[in-house]
Image 1 (cartoon, helix red, strand yellow):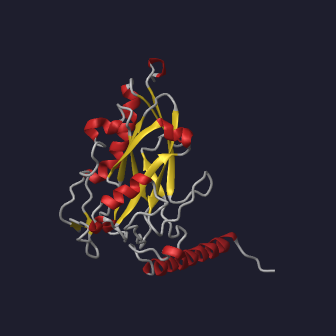
Image 2 (cartoon, one colour):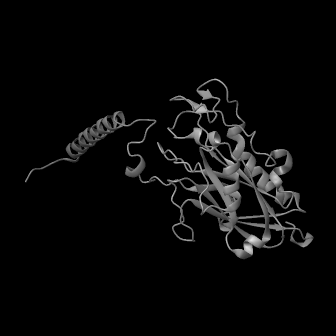
Length: 278
């Protein structure tokens, strides 16, 4: 048996862990040299995200216990300002100075060059603006929709109306000039017939995500396009369930509460009674 002193053991383990740490450091350096800071290693079908972008909405309740319920009281300023603040924070990046750098003024006839990003301001949001408190002091609140980013994904557009589309969307597409139809269209409706009875109308600003914002390539200063939907309700003091859907040939749609794809649902409740003030 070898008689090993404590000092020898300490020296051995010190050297051992130093060598182990150096090996780990070298391996990590080699790994990071193979990674692209802009383009993911695995994209599209090979990625965990996949090729079917999800649709999200804002404002989201700050309290997760509230789920996807947007509730406010028209008679209570505190209740209203809570949602206005959430929307202000969400829209803040779009209010930045978008000049210089790699910004480009895009249109359906002018896509950005490689490395450029489209100027994305809040000029197309119609009634859904801060001066009107985004409609949260009325019975017509605005909901902001945005598609999840998928690197390299390019939408396949519906450039003509389809039989399965809502009637108002079909009319809108048919009335849109052909050169401006490269869009991911958006439609909203009540989840069931009862919800539909509670809704007066939907107004979209604009009616879709313009195609010149795609594909997303993780370029600096890129801002995702947004669609503001003004939801005008007929009835207050009830919960109204709303579903919004994105329309592109390569966006798969599946409704229902499980495994939802290509759409998003949320609930709106507008109270008017003095007794329900916060």
